[in-house]
Length: 323
Image 1 (cartoon, rainbow, N blue to C red):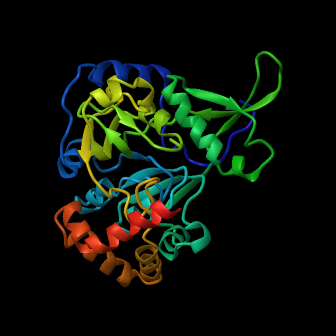
Image 2 (cartoon, rainbow, N blue to C red):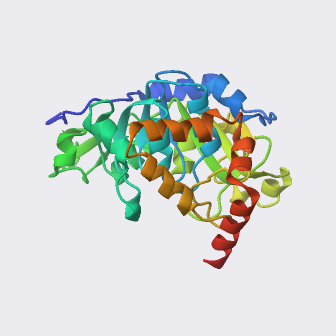
Image 3 (spheres, one colour):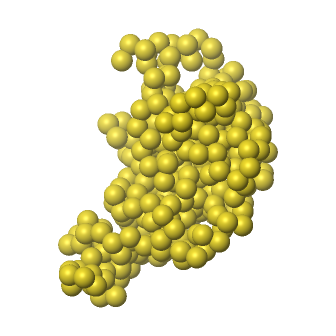
């Protein structure tokens, strides 16, 4: 080791730990894994865990599971902020998060910064360790490959390295200085997909972002799907399988499961809902009212959708069709 970033390593794992976990805990048989969001969170998510979230921050995110984490008052989570937008911000609003590995977080792109997320960071309530999108992806890939780290060059010469938990090393072949990116193995990942069968095989339309690696890297994987399909959907066309069944621990059917985010080819962002959330974020009392209305006042995601309304959901599907 030549140098070390000053950030805290929120998740550390050895290659043997990765391999041992997968050998000892992952079910290889074709088992029916269909369940409810409530049961899946009760079974697989605990206080203090490291959470990985699939999708792209406010695109193809698993809101039924995120809301259920808040509803069950899970606390002290660390989160991979690879591209974290509405997913992370709502978890912060629900007082579930203590620390974030940050690549892109606390902002809603063209909509501006979240006052809620910014307030949590500036007050010191949320601990942040800095990375880049590439370096967090490669940390996840290292775990997916059963490796303790991957070498890279992208953090070198930047202040991002300074505030990360990476280390530098000398290449044993060339003598070059490289950044060593430690494997990131989340305790649990929540991923939303277009199609899944009852065993956990998953298909994603459009970009998969990093979700194939995230599913392979994580100890537990909970999937929500717009539709649960017959296993022949995958058996007849195996190239559709982005996430294989043996990575997945639970499957939840959840139409409109990314609302108020976008689900490519299904429905567009609910811009009105997101705008109202960002307005609420300016005041802690208004944030609490938002969580009370959209999470605690309903028993599950079906009741949440009833609150959104059929007219709005239909309109969002039409908007996506027009794009």
